[in-house]
Image (cartoon, rainbow, N blue to C red):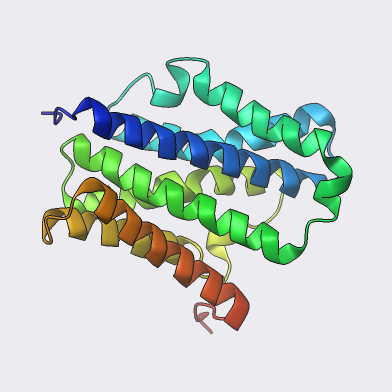
Length: 211
């Protein structure tokens, strides 16, 4: 049975979810600028990066139609993020890689904790909720990379999906065992994911490969 979530709690999740949608839409559009794609493809890539992970999560927990398709709000936010990249084309081209990595890490962390919390609200147990949070954070990027015909980042040596999983697990465990409030649990998960992701990028950490 789906847990009844107070209005303020739902509002918090919606705000964070929309923020993550905007950030990841911009990230997807920026990634598209590195490839020879047309303007329509850029918007498609931004939409996919921002929303596909959440759509997969909602379908898996039986929440249909998915939240991002129940109203124009999520698509509009995603397309706004893409439009911002188009309108600020020259400025975007001058964005240092460091800022791009920080933006990507923020989006990853936001989606990981929001996806986990939504799964928990649907009555999903902690372990599966953390896995669904990871899917929510990484699913859109996987689809984007596949459309660009490149190996998805989650299949490379980078600590990307692992960072999302650690952040999602922190959120789930904080709710289940520490009895932390929603804000505290999500904040803890966000910080764990962001710190692990950025530290791995800056320090060159990677997962081992099988010989």
